[in-house]
Length: 121
Image (tube, rainbow, N blue to C red; front, side, top):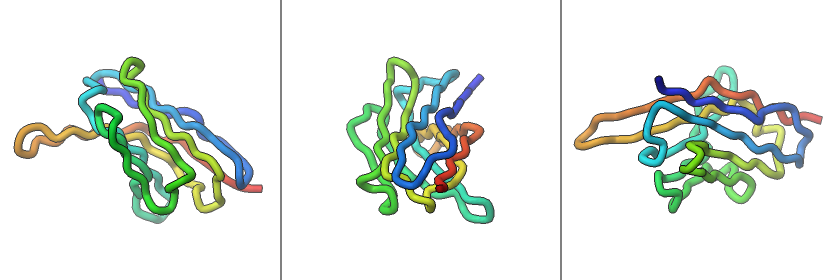
């Protein structure tokens, strides 16, 4: 049974920091690209950050570059999102995603339940 469980969300003041965690089980974590998405009610889900399976390559949305860092621990089957210098515009539900394409197009795509991040004074 595949599980992705996010934690670490909450209420923080502008300029503050939070670290999100996504603990996973039920699949070969070290073979998957891991992603953090976020969604604001009424808007499309946005890709925030990605990290390749070996942890050797990361990508970020322009809006979070220099403020957010994605990293993973393959021994613990966990991916993290360190969020610094938080802004009101970062308020959203944050989702953990595991994705792998095998062969010519078989997609494995798993999602967590989301964790709320609210940035407000």
